Image (cartoon, rainbow, N blue to C red; front, side, top):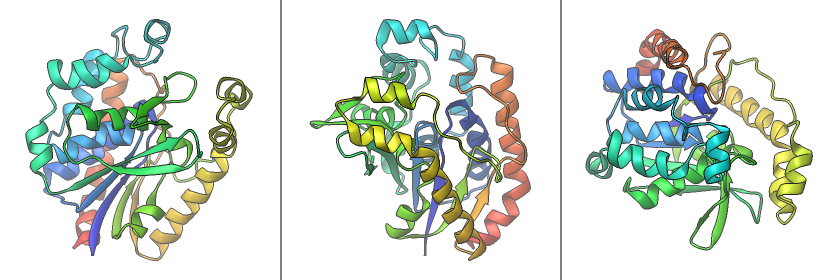
Amino acid sequence: MNKGLVLEGGAMRGMFTCGVTDVLQENGINFDGIVGVSAGATFGCNYKSKQPGRAVRYNKRFCRDSHYGTFRSLIRSGDLYDAKFCYEDIPFKYDLFDIKTYRENPIKFFVVVSELETGKPLFHEIPNGDAADLKWMRASASLPLVSTPVEIEGKTYLDGGITSSIPLKKFMEMGYEKNIVILTRTRNYVKKSSPFAWLMKIVLRKNPEIVKAMSRRHIMYEEEKVFVFEQEAAGNCLVIAPETDVGISRTEHDPEELERVYQMGRETGLKNLERVKNFLS
């Protein structure tokens, strides 16, 4: 049975995910495939490149930089998180992404993006970890209203979480039958409709399908969550989630808060380590 890892997004809630995945890496837990959504993609890629600790390290280092999650960046570049800084300067200059190891690692790594024209999710494998692949990661994490839609090969994309937040069902259909699912919300979290749906209708009026997808995002999230827990009850996946709300801003600028949530993830990862080993054995 192919073993998979499914990583939900959540911006800086992803520090929880990083804590869990670093523990799994450090203890030799292997997968055949990984699928990441939004922050699950941008942070989860470090599993394939075998760089535990990298995501929390560079986030703590740059969280107070003006290019990083600030309105100054949004006004200056069109993106709350400056695209050049995040997807060129950091991985290729300041905190090097190990492209060689990423490319040679046989784990398949997929990201989920949302296509503006159709309002549907697209699963895309990124095998090389180079600049072209990082553009797909950027698309997966491009939040509506605060990011410039990303154009790749003539099509335009936004954050994958708009159309598939916890993509277990599709991943199982792709042949990954035994999965670890890492959530950044508690098990009893209930997603509410977006208060900015009206603004989406104005800003993305030329793309009514993505506006429609955004308007029902909370419904999609609940449907996917129900499926995940049904599969867990059936023994097809194991869910790891924070026991309490991580209590962190999506654009957290305090390195101590990032470290706190990362340590929450590590503690949860260690607590579930034997369960993971038994489940995957």
